[in-house]
Amino acid sequence: MKAGLLLTNFKTYNLPNGIRFHLYPTEKFKTLVFSVFLHQNLRRELAAPTALLPYVLERGTGKWPTTRELAKAMEELYGADILTDIAKRGERHVLQFMLEIVNPLFVPGEENLEEKGLEVLKEVLSNPLLEEGRFKESYVKREKELLKNRIEGLINDKVSYALERCIQEMCREEKYGVYRLGQLEDLEKINSQNLYEYYQDVLARAPMDVFVLGKIDAQEILPLIEKAFDFKREDLWEIDPTQIYREVQEPRYVEERLEVTQGKLTLGYRTNTAVTDDDFYPLLFYNGILGAFPHSKLFQNVREKASLAYYANSRLERNKGIMLIASGIEINNYDKALKIIQEQVSSLKEGDITSYELESTRVGLINQVRVSEDNPYQIINRHLGGIIGGRQESIQEIIEQLKGVTREDVVRVAEKIKLDTIYFLRNKG
Image 1 (tube, rainbow, N blue to C red):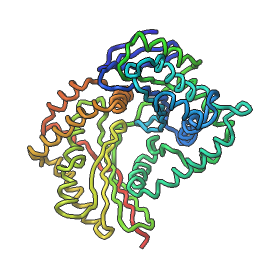
Image 2: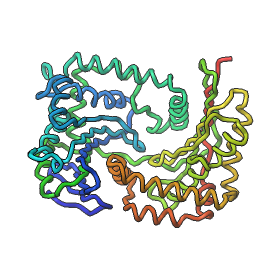
Image 3: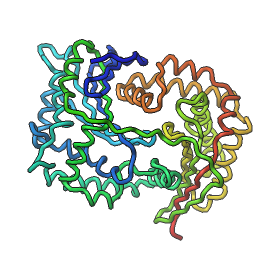
């Protein structure tokens, strides 16, 4: 095993089969956290099978063929739990498997607890329950039904639905427009055989990052990681770079009518700023001053003073370089709300930033960074984001960058930000 560079507080190693292992030794937590991430390009036809995979794998393994038996194995690890998820990180689709166990140092007389935890993780990941050489039919059928319900259920959460629809319309010609859970018509094509074949490809060819965080010695955990992740790997898939920079000619207006009583006005902007750009930290300030904090312009001027919105905020999709402004409004207040939202955006470009707004944003951003150090999953996700975005920095380096951002920096960023799409979800009347 070859050791890599020391990046932030993580030590990175390359396993013989091409898997990257990242170790964060720390005495801050009383648990050990294991996280596995498998990467692939975001593609419409593969989104549904990718989203289905972790739930089928969780149903049972060769050693623990039922959910109940797997849960019992978790109980024997002092109440450990295994969690799975699907994420979009830029224009890549990421499968996530996470296991948290109590640190053996706090269980007197217990031996090999971390090895037992890794055995469970390996079982779920690489030894699924098979039936005639493919996934168990009843498990696939049931998980397809549940995923179908999740895809259809998005429309019941109108806030999330409006954000997703704005992204789909804004990025309709880009991979980022693909919904992370896939489409119903693609889900219907999946069966136990083709899903198993796809799973074999993912396990063999998807770039993989394995993280361990907690109080543990590198020389102790490295042999266990090698043993747990010794499965055969082939030529890895190439992960395409995410498209960040895009010219906007004229903003598009998209209106959708459903049975709603409250309108959802969502604006999609191109920031034309990547994580690796010098303007990345000024962009964080821009978003913070505009709509990410209670002191922000959208919250104060659209929601509080003008009383035009039930909520109004902005958020960055930093790995894609887009910003979304979301608001819930009375349907007949559309014109007023759109006008005052756009006025807040224009005010930043004109340099209308008070010292209070600038410094409150600085305090808020620095506090977010410091608070993230109290959560092992946020620490891991920040490092993973650095791998994906191509920018690795320590907490101290991030804070120093935030301390140095000026009003002029924010105005410079504001000049690059262009409105791409206006999406309005309204009633059928």
